[in-house]
Figure 1 (cartoon, protein in one colour):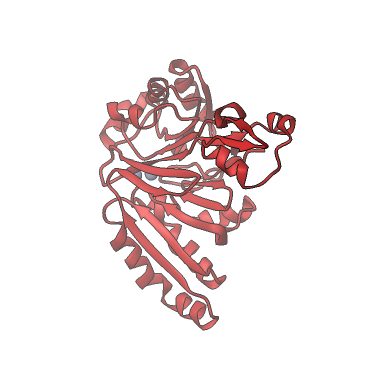
Figure 2 (tube, rainbow, N blue to C red):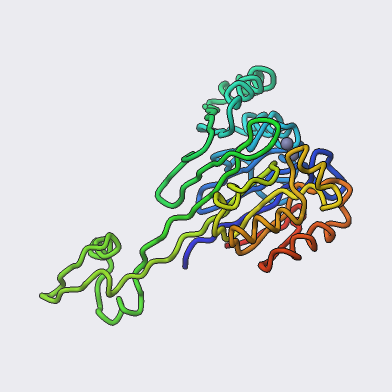
Length: 311
Ligand SMILES: [Zn+2]
Ligand SMILES: [Zn+2]
């Protein structure tokens, strides 16, 4: 059984949080990797409500340093230090991230890091700055980033699960092949010989295609955007305004429901998740969702706090 990617929307609001929508943050879990995209105010409490453990977070990806995406970091990091986080937390973000993280450590973390050290833990925080291109890679997936159109350095991210070569179990059983290193050869694409009989890797293996999830906020419309998020299984994108406020959206570097739908259509994504809704749409998110659906045929959700998607 293949491992699933689980996405949890911890916050789906815009610059002013509402009763129903926290500042923005999205949690993505794949195997033992817990990744966090943005960390608006109150994110650590959203972890508790979602029954997720902040101590498991390996990496945080910041889109940009507007407060609604980052005000939750000092609190989250303090809690991690106090709770005995033992290891290195990697924080990725656009230009300026190293200085911002240094400021948080200097202004908020001193006492908590000292306590953590006294208790025998080693909590390190490392900051990385990116413009576009590769951010992180392991055996299972890659994370890349791309430039967005917003009034300060801002980047979006793609999480791409790699294609996996798997053994067809029913064919394996028929051949009565033992489990063991020989299977590793087949997965690596090498033919093997068992009891004088040649077994071709291509006859017994199949490729499970990877999956792409894209995270694009905050941003105004650009032609390049759909290229970056092309063929995503899930596109998480901002949709701050409705078309009535398109002029304001353009001026402030934000999207409308209609423009988000246009990008989803151009990029041929499967599911479109709209987040970062202005407080005025808190209870009428349908307005934004319907705009997107008018231009995009795929599945559209106006994500709510604590919604989850498994892929
Ligand atoms: Zn912003
Ligand atoms: Zn924002």
